Length: 249
Image (cartoon, rainbow, N blue to C red):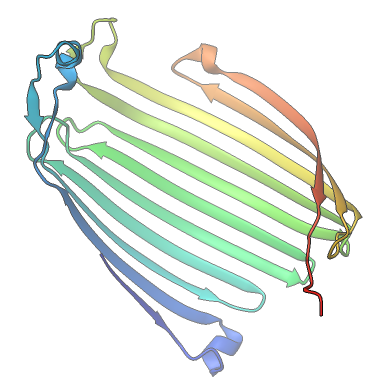
């Protein structure tokens, strides 16, 4: 595994007005050496003493690049990661994963922060060409309403998954097709309000109440019975009791 990071002088002109830029690059390569493992298709036979070994020879490679900048009131980064898994025994399909992400953060004052994230994840079976793409976008807010007493947290996210998933073989014993289409969308809202009723101190307990809720809307254009709305809300009570002992004279 190799990883590099480059930064500029945090006191320089560029860092003061534009932010402190950085570049990260990483490379990872690993191999699962051939070892004897039970044949998954002969699991019952192996339980009764008939051991049918197969040999695993899996090669994994991953490369990543991230470019970004940090500042007193904002930060941003763009990254891309490529991962490949190759099975030399041909017992499992070779796969490739491409993950791209964009992250933005803004802190207009000491009590407020905003965040935005956009992610694209593409998973592909190299042998069959089947691929699934997942998009995830999220927006978050954190706000201190009363210093050291009351705070608010809110998050909204949207997820879309579409593509085709292929299995080895034409169909299994339960009649599942060798290829299935996926087309799902999920919208989620989360909010939490935290109130510190009694602030904890050394050798004195503190009491905190939190009310949070999550609403989720899922739409499935392939399996329509999976389309549903869910809502959950919780009331949480937390007791903090920091203890400290002092040795006697």
